[in-house]
Image (cartoon, rainbow, N blue to C red; front, side):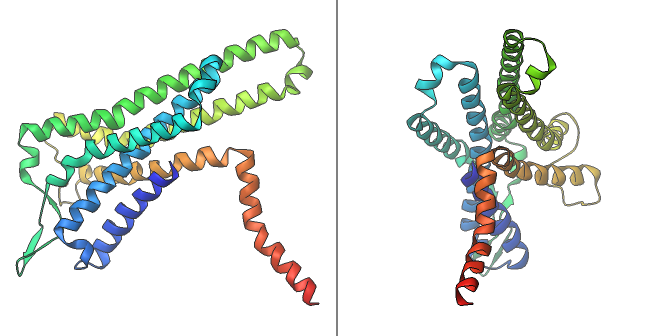
Length: 278
């Protein structure tokens, strides 16, 4: 998940947005190179989304199906799932390479990328766009909500049973570390679901508006409310690819301990060296 999110940062933010804005005639702005960068950007985005779904399913199995957990939640299966998601994302996004044309031609050299006008009129591309939207974010929306809902339901029912076995005294509930861990899991799952849904909502709404109104994607009028909403949706969508990794990582006590050690280690090392010199 972290690698997929990092690739989004590299391909979209650094190689496309920053270099395109500040170095418009560098090697990265040749149309052939630009098309590859944009295609890899979409591959990385889909990898990030579907690895989040895979991780959510893994957590669901680990919590709700103890008998299946030992067989499914293994390093080998994790490797297989990652490879399958990567291959699927590559195959799914290959058509993006063919939707762009040169924005300008200078001395027979093609520069930058621009979406072909036929992309909005040819039916095959319309079908492709619908398929892409179904695969991200419609299907991930449904799967993440469904899996997290079943996981939370299982945790709540298990807590009720556990509370009944331990007794109903407030002291027993407050000192039950297992119940507290399950409560933290519910908060984590709600944070993941809420983050993904909220950050993709604007982009999804813009897509629906294009299908049922006269609005169009990628209009050059930056005073137009729909264009502002569309660009804001892109920003939030890319930001979503960064939040899940932080939510998962920062919620883990061992990760926080290692992060603290990483930050304090250089300071402690310098202090020891200074102490030895003195």
